[in-house]
Image (cartoon, rainbow, N blue to C red):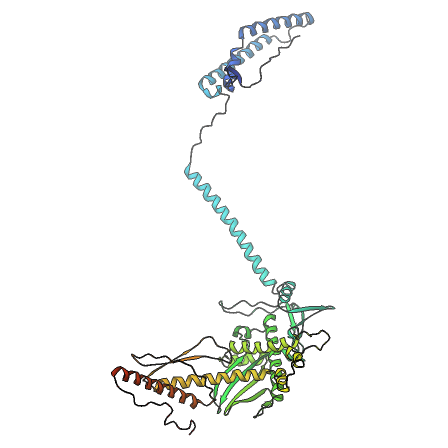
Length: 527
């Protein structure tokens, strides 16, 4: 029995024409619809029907030969066969009519479906429902986040101990000895030789079983944050200390200043102070105690015409006759400071210039304590300056050696700066008073901004309307602390300016100057 095998060429571009230069021109392959049409034209329906009849006859003959003894199983068998063939033909006719009516059934390529009817009201309702569902989901999520945050704030009143310890290590020196963590806030690493140590202990702040509710603060105030670190300080370093410096003349304060740590009222009202503020206050206590101890020892050892007085926590030294410098050490506890703030709202004024000067002076003292000049040669003693090493080869006298050994103490530098402050205030007052009293000539004072703690410069211009003059050579004069000497000098300069202006005017008018002298009729400076 043979089987019909259909052999077709692979669907590819066929060569339509080859040009003379060898270029091939391909023909476009057929689409699926065109290919189906081409294959449909190849079908010979008549031949197939005859073949089917011959094959059916042969099968009937074979079946007759094989089953001649079989009779008709059912009397209506022929009727059933005809009805089934008729049903098949009717179904085929219906399919043909549908194909003829709907042209899309003849196309094998994908056909776009008919667009569905747009119902705007239904679309709006669907969008509204989807938006309401999304809003409900977002609201539930935000509510969960809010509840989790509030629960975290309620349950976690203490911050992480290790994070706080890491922040502390970035600012303070810590070391672990056994199971304890110790820190040092002294200035020994910078060269301090003060006897009191600044060792403090760091431990974890235990959470109470029933923590008290946080105090209600106004909305503008910062939230209360408990410490995860507990700092234990020595009793000598607890509280607050400050240095009070005042200049008095005849029981009247000329100038005053304080070296302290400015703290806000909210930080003082809290029952638990943050460890950073606590350590800063303790280090300030240590600094004030070391500074006052150094000044007190120097005040006792310094030999002056008027001896210095050290009584308790107060140092009194004389600057000028009738002018005294008073340095006092004040120490208060947290409870006393809170009571003071609640009883009186007056706050002490902090002086940054005083703080910078005192820190700089103590820093220089610490620097000299650990930075010694290198020995030359290496076998010589340590700490000998170059002048002392060269004193022998250069045959220096004892006075030169004594000057090379002497150095200014911390108290002497403070006294020198304080004297400069007093003299500058007196000078400003005298110049302003003299300028107000003298209307002609006009006196203008210009204070230079570039100055040092012991040196200030002022430029005084004496002017007359329509007249200009310039001094050819400058003179250097040293005056005492008495204000009258400066007043006499200003008066002399103003008089000399008037005389020079009169001489210039006389020459302009053609007058003849018979004599002129600026040193006549002058008596003693002090009468």
